[in-house]
Structure formats: C-alpha cells, structure tokens
Image 1 (cartoon, helix red, strand yellow):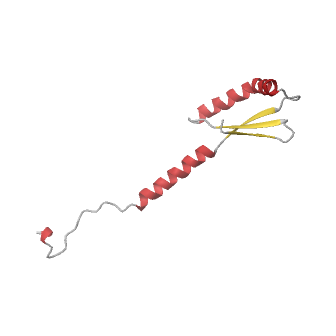
Image 2 (tube, rainbow, N blue to C red):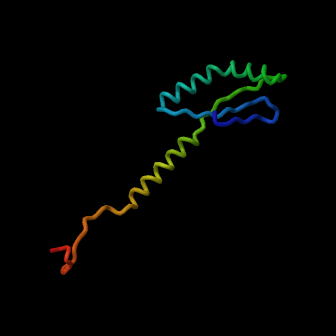
Image 3 (cartoon, rainbow, N blue to C red):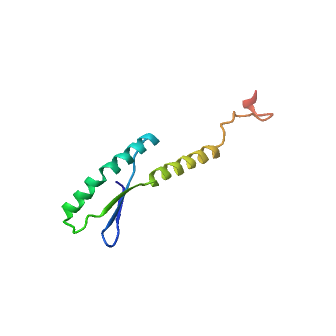
Length: 98
C-alpha cells in the first residue's frame, strides 16, 4: 500500500498499491486484492466500529513505475552527453608523436 483516501462521508476508501514485477505479476496482485475486498471491508468496519462499512477500492499507484521510467530516460541522456573516449592524437612536432 502506498496511500489511501477516504471520502468525507467515510463511505468510500480508495487504497493505492504498488507491486514490483511484470504485467502478469501486477495482474495477479490486482486480482488478489479484488478477491479480498469483502474481507478488508468487514475488517475496516469491525476495527473502526463504523455504522457503515466503506466501499474499498484498490487502485494501482503508477508513480513508482513513472519515477523509474524518468530515471531511465535521464540515465540515457547522461550517457549520450558523455564524450566518447577518443585516442590521444599527437600534433606535428610533438615529442609524443615520434
């Protein structure tokens, strides 16, 4: 879980999550959370002793993946800006060139 938002009337709780892995892993995590939603809803209502159990909605937090993509782009730009290692050339009359 990376964060949560609750509506002012406490009837909707949006929980943001992030998972590391490929698309299949993310799909499995999303599916698992959706299947567990009724459990989470009951537990929230029971533990907080609320009159109404809020609807719990899970949303993928894309900020981690976005940050990684930005970092990757910046690394590529930095690599392109580095001057290529050129062999040292000697000038005519330079003692190194003899």
